[in-house]
Image (tube, rainbow, N blue to C red; front, side):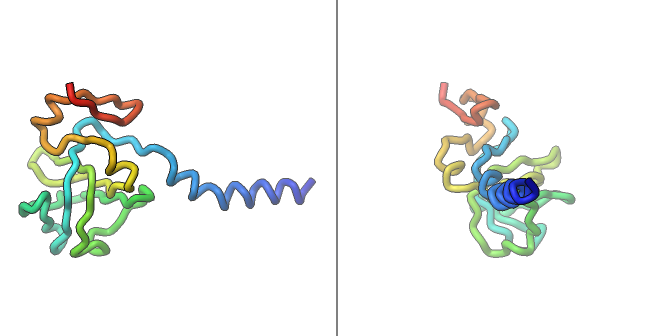
Amino acid sequence: MNRCAAFFVAAAVVSAPALAQQLQRQFPANALRGEIVVVSPPEITLNGRPSRLSPGARIRGENNLIMLSGSVIGATLQVHYTTDTAGLVHDVWVLRPDEAAKPWPRTPEEAARWSFDPIAQTWSRR
């Protein structure tokens, strides 16, 4: 009996990271798609234009774990991002290839013309 329990615990521990990567992440409807390059934190380029990370900005990697901005200096990242009321980039999600393949608005104007399904996490053009 103890060996069976140990086996199931070990199997759960080994498979949990793989399962976590396959789970669909939930992005807010106000998130936009973009390309970010961290120049010198908090300085970034967002879609080729200078921008800044907000104080307390969070960058989540492909595995949804928090990344330090200094660890991705110079890397070009396909992301979903939100901004705060001052226009600073606040939440960033580095996209996996399957997430980047889905259509997603790049501007607030596009988002206003598209429809968002929060359950399926998909956008469709009206």
